[in-house]
Length: 486
Image (cartoon, rainbow, N blue to C red):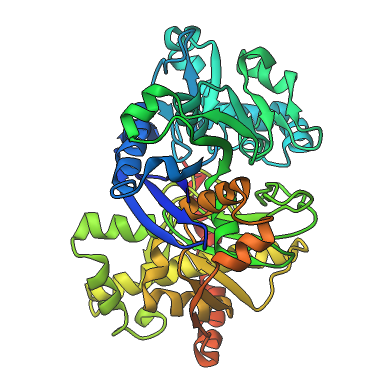
């Protein structure tokens, strides 16, 4: 017997087929584009998600009896709203969370409703949330917006294509800025700011709630059986925190992906405007966290701009000493989240000399991201969200041994690697709980989590980075001041 998890990330979908022993027996990845443009535009086409899911599911089912797939679970990046017409079809592309065109809407919300939004949503109004994004679409594309009769979210749209349901989970809803965090219900006042009512919104359920069976159309497109049950699912971060091993208080995950995240499992959320608060999959727990916007995205920018491969980058960075011979990088390519909450902030290189080579730039980018993560974790600790001495490291950037060592040294944390820790694996684990493979989240984690290595901080390097971080903060203060000048 098998279960299936399907994730939708920043540029690709991944499917993981899991057996009753908690082993990933097949995986598949399929990419799709993000449509960039002037003013910070970043959109995705919901149809691309569905097609990618179908390709991946067909791939992992190769050689498998579809009747043996008991349950399917989806997850996706939060905040990505999908506007549907009366026939359930998207009226336009979806604004992705990295889109920054809604700066004016976010500023308006923070100025006029900031205290109310923070009280209800536990977050500061910023361009990453669904509410200002929806307001931007309403203000700039009124004809398309007028056709919208329902609002759903990325993973819920795809799952709706599989089952015909109209639901979402409360963790996803917490990322919309339309939802009362404590009451766990859509908020009429916040909805009204986007011209919406509760009738436009999906029913709120728990992540493991049954959504239905695979419909005939989806079965034909994927090769799945119509007997396969589908559960609601949740957000990509909730799933990867679970998959990595974050199931108990103080369990920490550190993500080196497009964005960088540090999440700490806690029995309470942290009421602060620069802390990102979400509920954990386990009832009664949360994973307050912090984020740097351009983590692996910074390295990808360097690759796309100057050429090279990630493998070449790692080999080059390893030959450059700690501190990159004075070259310092700030990864504010699209603004920054923790602890600045400033979409206008921009990055830069400082300390540049004629002696610096491309390898120095690679090392500086890796170190700059590590300093940004140190900024995040320092802020979290200052708000009472305490990490232990270890963290589960996840994301594509974690494959680089030299980058792992830089981050471990800068943060003075031992980084634990596990065999499978991506969101699709977490979704498959949730499907396994529903299918009866595991009793609960704790047993699923105990069975599926397999440690593969540890990166231990080097004390000498940690001391060097602590001194360099002082300089990093001084330059951050200057860049913050500079970004407000016309």
